[in-house]
Length: 114
Length: 116
Image (cartoon, rainbow over all chains, first blue to last red; front, side):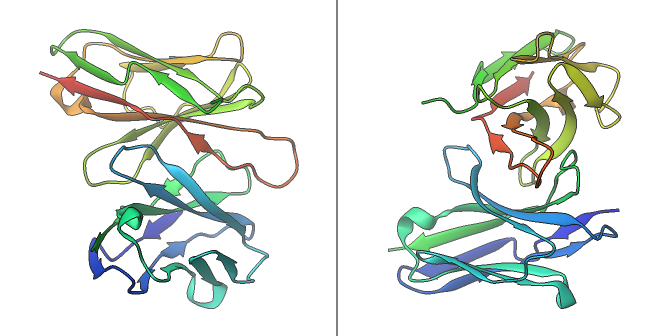
């Protein structure tokens, strides 16, 4: 069975602080895909990144970076120099090879205060 | 904008009524997914289509839930005899499955259902 755990329910930081959102996953598949989505107050899920199980390279996109470690089954997300506009709920998700059943974590609500 | 669209955005209904939601995927996408999201939780997969074929429906919540995608384009999700527990956000997503690396699902804005 596939499972995604986001242990941090809520995080609050002050603008310009760095923040890391944790994601731990469970799967028996050898081929799988990990995702992060952002859900701002407007409600629409916004795709941020996809990573396959064979690519453990960390990725950086602007202020966002992702750390994928198969040894610990983790796919953590770091926002550097956070901004108020980063305030949202962030979801980590996992799918198998066929991508027909994506499992989401419960989400982490990030609040960035000015 | 050619993203995923859903209609209506909000629906209020009385218990026992039937409701139908529509989803229009990104035009070149062949896969379409339905999810339910309740307050404080992540989206929960319900069903998905590849073109007009419904390839997975065992996760639909009950036999009151059904979905169609008759021409492989837009899809509808129907809930019959609604119950208060059906109150949630219903999300639609679409993706392009081309046989290669897995596809990425792009989500619509959702339909928020309130059952009184």
